[in-house]
Length: 184
Ligand code: XMP
Ligand code: MG
Image (tube, rainbow, N blue to C red; front, side, top):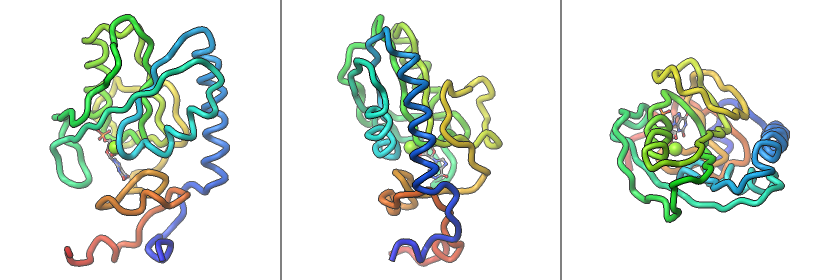
């Protein structure tokens, strides 16, 4: 089944749980006196979003954005198209963006600037995974990071390859032959 396609488990279920608990404590401390709007970026961050908000012991609202970047499968171009925008008023409010992974930083850089442009009071970023080696936007430093990963394409726990593998309970690297299979 699914796990036959995995070459290596990079972050186990247990390690994910520990990292999310730690992030939850940091975010509870950060937002205990504020009413933060937590924004999940679809679709990759959906699983992380569901878990991280349950570790935040503070008053919060949730919303989602769906963005697509015009790029190839593996690299985002920096041009971001908003597929689903926020339903929440932005001006004067505190925002926490929840991402699955930061790679070049282009997607997030665009979203942070957009929320500032709409006059958010504050915008912070929590990402489950960070690939700092690949960063192009140097001043995009996430405020809260779960786990740093090497420069490899990863799947699982929300992250996909061609929309599959999001339901793996851990983060893994696919076997090379999985990428070379002919298109259906
Ligand atoms: P940028 O380059 O804008 O990209 O920081 C962030 C988005 O790129 C996708 N991404 C990945 N998706 N495995 C994935 O499944 C990966 O290893 C990976 N690296 C980047 C992801 O959608 C993220 O939101
Ligand atoms: Mg994504």
